[in-house]
Length: 104
Image 1 (cartoon, rainbow, N blue to C red):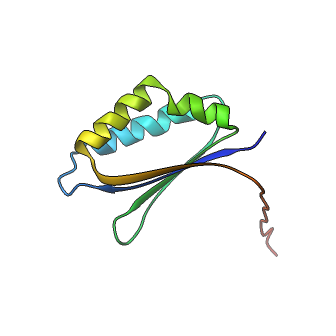
Image 2: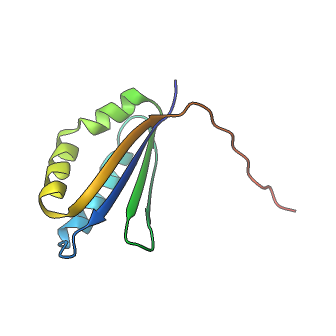
């Protein structure tokens, strides 16, 4: 079984309402409750682009999150009132090599 990683790149409108930040927090908490959830990370680049990386244990687990009714409603709300653009890429991990420094 291969992990599924969703990379969500977006740019917010200048007039984005506070509702965006509340909804983003709600979705993060909701995703953590889904079977197969691994992690959720979010970063903001200097130019304002936002990148969210969500990892699930498998494509099937990712699909359950993708198709969740509340998640779909949030996506529609985002298109209507939060984003100027976005790009979603869903990928299955082909190979992974991890290393962690153990200290001196």
